[in-house]
Image (cartoon, rainbow, N blue to C red):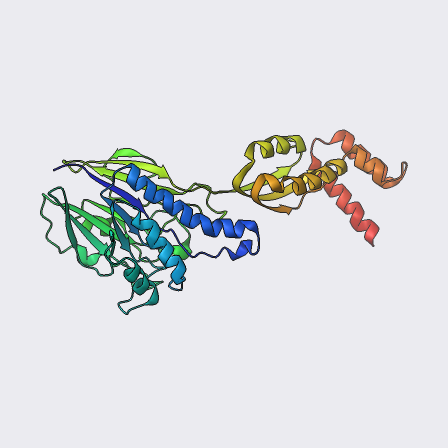
Length: 375
Ligand SMILES: [Mn+2]
């Protein structure tokens, strides 16, 4: 029995429309990226000489993906030298009735290396004489609370075979958004199945967290390329090699080309415009979508400078979004520019500026004066 090599991906969400970037160059780049990163997954399967390329659900974002996109995905997956196993997830579920998505996929994939696992029934195969059995648990709907892996428990599992579960759903304790708690599985549920390990999808963060040697109960690859500014991580796939003693060596492979970065920054005494300038210069990358959330305060001159900086940085990125809520700092220069010398406001604010170590007292005093003057 030789080693068995598997490339594991999931949550590719082909067909995502990225309408929040509607009409921008970033929108078309993000749509195209889902295909390009899938090519990276296929390339990795060939580089690693994988026997199987497993897609553990949500290859497609919904059942309404266009025929053109389905065909393009099949064409990409066909280029893998591995056998490609595709499991329906909750976004691309299969409820037992013929649907356009999986009908078209099957038609395009006929007589290829692609195998669609629509039914909860073991798939027995072998690699160079080593028997391998996959236990697919496809999703039958988009939203479903309980898991669909229970049937695997009762199957007799000969010790000389490699037994691999395939499922798509939330794993309790992984700490993701409550909104994503579909097809909930506990570690106990996964263990009760009696397989050697599970290849899962659904949660868009990886598990285990890093490459290692060992015997994890389950793997989650995360998306193959990030899909929103909520993801700080790049896109990943797992490369898993199983030896004759059924010990695993697993390597996290980066498969995405684009990145998102959300920066929440507050200007003030400890974070200045020049700090921002230095950081921003280091971030520059045409494959990066930058999302800035700016607050705090800056001098009047720096505020003007900041605004022009923000409009100038766009060409250095794929896309820049900026929520600019930076206010004017009430410093000595501001007091002199705003109030006539000798007025109460001038004296009062200047005294605070002399004595106070915090911007807060000045900001509060200034806003009191503004309220008073507005009456
Ligand atoms: Mn999912």
